Image (cartoon, rainbow, N blue to C red):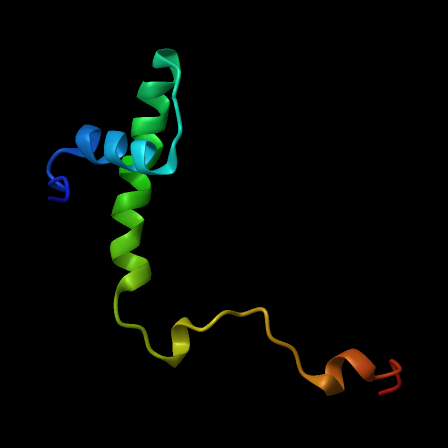
Length: 70
């Protein structure tokens, strides 16, 4: 049974166990904070998107091959 999303500590411990990671106890609070924030971002990443959400890192061949002459 998968851990409840209402229990981030249990979900983190399950993810660490499955990955075979042993986390030192002093790192647990910061890791839990990051894990919870990443879980919240997953909803945004997995949500429906339209063409406007496509990456902006595209280029036009004309803009990278022009010689600067106007």
